[in-house]
Amino acid sequence: MSIDRILERAVNGERLSMEDAVKLYESDEVEKMGEAANTVMKKWHPEPVTTFVIGRNVNYTNFCDTYCRFCAFYRAPGSKEGYVLEDDVIFQKIQETMDVGGTEILMQGGTNPDLPLAYYTDLLRNIKSRFPNIWMHSFSPAEIWKIVEVSGLSLEDVLSELHAAGLDSMPGGGAEILTEETRLRVSRLKITWEQWIDAMKVSKKVGMHGTATMVIGFGESFEERALHLQRVRDAQDETECFTAFISWLFQPENTGMYKTKKLTARDYLKNVAISRLFLDNIENFQSSWVTMGPEVGKKSLEYGCNDFGSTMMEENVVSAAGTTHKVNTNQILTLIREAGKIPAQRNTKYEIIRRFDGEESAEKDFVMQN
Ligand code: SF4
Image (cartoon, rainbow, N blue to C red; front, side):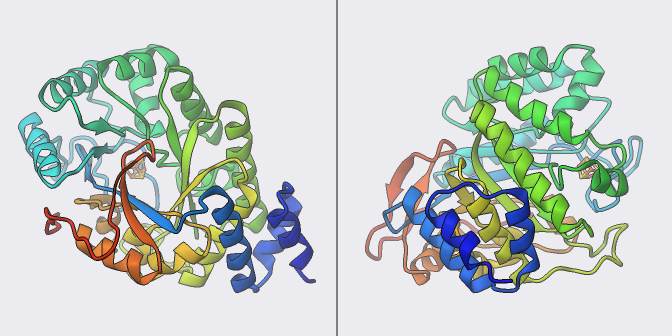
């Protein structure tokens, strides 16, 4: 069955249904979907600019009591291989980020049952007193809910306290697929899809915002993917809590799910395009070059993405599963230009800080380190 009519409707600004999304997932006409998604992207972003943020991932602890089957990063509480970074190490990493013109710190770790709320609020206050200009885009919903459990406070109280201490926004990691079926199968102890959505909605209520994510390749059905998109779209309709949407493929290597069939770059690009067409209320779509590699990342700019994500000075979670693609700022500039776009550095709120017109390069480049 032709998908032309569905694509035409989406390009004309009509909302797609879950049934439409399933039909798109069933189709192999990926290039057509990309073309339509690109047209929709240009309505949001008429200028040929692709943004990126200079930021660093800081994986402050790998202790985790959630034991997701797909995760190669965590260590059980009490493990000799577990760690919690010293505050001074974290400060040093932030300093290095600022030294290369970075603006964003994405602190993420396991759900560590031994860290009380005061650990987070003290750390945030100490960071902000040393680095008042750094944007703390940190702690995903699963970590937030662990703090709720450990503190005995409400979700709203925990988020309010974190925000007051210096948390600026929340990354939407841990959404994976927002359905009960897949979560029970791959991450039985993780927060439910409702809790993930609630954390994002309440973060908006207390004055922050966040991003929405999606990971495909756990063996989920097309219907589940469509339901994931529907749930994200509904939350956005209700609260406008998401500034951006980011999707990537599950990397089965080195995980408890290593036998799972690995999806292809084509599957990724199809998902990017369908998401852009379905999520008509989210402005920014990030490319996932960290997992997909720079070339596919570049290609995704023709499939609905307007943003190249973060320079990601560190990425330990994905690299623990064996996939890390390291690029520096000047490489990002080159890749964006090769895709025919003008690179521009943005902040976490997607405000442009600096355009790199012509052949201009970043004065302060850096080499990645893990
Ligand atoms: S994905 Fe996150 S919550 Fe799940 S085991 Fe890994 S660190 Fe823990």
